Length: 247
Image (tube, rainbow, N blue to C red; front, side, top):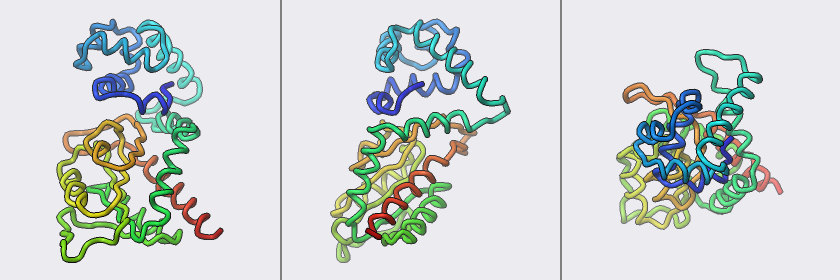
């Protein structure tokens, strides 16, 4: 119910409101505006601005839209303890937008003529970095994964000009990821961030950010946020690279 184009316009405070709503949709349906503001640690004015940005005439209309959206989802999907199909269906609706397609085209323009692509991520992001590097290599693009976040890049042996780093991070706030990006930044490289939040520190450091806006699921330090959108993006761009290489 929240379009990709509108989500991209959110600032940090509005993103906090969005994250709280998607995690507590049923509760927000009946929640007074002051309660939502308190739970999201924002002001009521910020909640109203968020509702207006999303295209609603006030908080009451936003709550009504949440209720209607839930009823629609319940009619389409059988309830389970975890049903990732609901947020994923929302994601795949977003990828059909003109703004999202432009992001993919912009990423292709950066990657297509790069002499080298390097994928970087930590934890599950590292596994996806290995997969991404292999998939793009299969598509004809020279791509390698970075296994060690402390990998040195000596000034005496600079990276090829135009090298592209694909940095994968759910939060976009992991210190080792931020340190890595700051380390390669002095090089003549481009950074494309694939992250869950378009307002993260990583997103602000990158030349281009592709955000997928999935509900974040964490248990202590363990992150269970779905990475299906990341695999989709890797494969989508990989297939487009393959098409360009065979024209």
